[in-house]
Length: 140
Image (cartoon, rainbow, N blue to C red):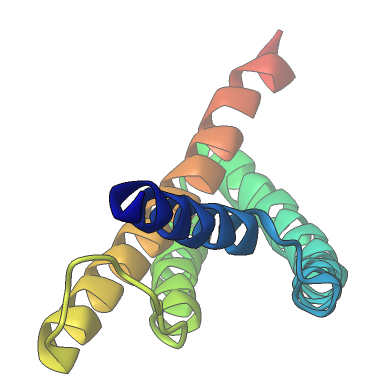
């Protein structure tokens, strides 16, 4: 009888843990949704601003390929360099939190910087390819 009572208590404890794990905290979800909404409200105008920069880079690259002058080459090179440094500054200002299995704040910051650098390079590369892939279509 005593073993049966212990088993019931254990099952109640397990049931309580499972119910707590499945419990939905509406305040937390509302805060999460607000954070997601705020992200898109800020990210979308930034994205289209970057795309306008890509159009300008496309014009510089087009002029450079057609006229091959020192001025157009210089403007194109400086523009691409400015863009990569802008993306580095932009993404390095982001601090990634909640990196699993990392206890040390120095290692967390290092991983955050590596992720930021990878994001900066990827976005720059993507926009660079966007310009490079679009230019041949202007010639046809």
